[in-house]
Image (cartoon, rainbow, N blue to C red):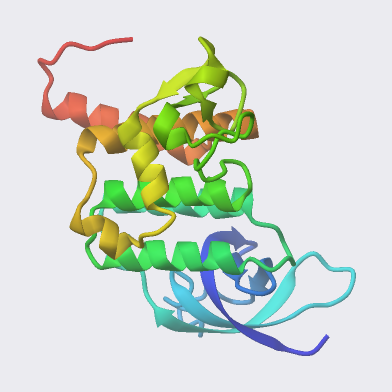
Length: 262
């Protein structure tokens, strides 16, 4: 196969042997790719500083039939992610975003919408938009694009507007139904959360940031998306667990007299 070049977002970088690295990157039209950067760990490697997580790069690679890994011959930086990776919270958040893409995108399949979502999310974070807002927006959109968590316009059972009737997340389900069809089963979705899920269908992050939801609303969106994600995957993303445990530890360290709960 001939050399290919595409704009990509770096998802993962893993050391291989003494001098090489395996890079997983996301492209618009060929989905997720994995390739080897020969000599990337050497001191004066041409790849030095070019393959940082969440960086937007131009990648040139060669694939050979029968081999799982491509051979990456060049990586050129388009947009670094240094500002996001400069603190602990940013590092944890980067891993969390990338975990979603590693889980919800496919190799060798077009992924334009997922690519644009991750690109816009990274751009918003680098631009200083509130991290909690950006993360909740990203979570909900990943689930929607994956076909797991449809836009909550109408009840799939009675087809009436959820905004009028209220919504419920049934047990072991990834979609919302109206409160009448849900009867007494499942978790009631507050109207502010439903409004957030409707807003993201028509507003980008800069617009959302102008009239941002409250901290309480974002916390409820977090819990809802986590419940849907766990139901679909039958497990939780490791990075999500690490974030929760790390932030809880930092909170205890900053306020050692606060009571703890199990």
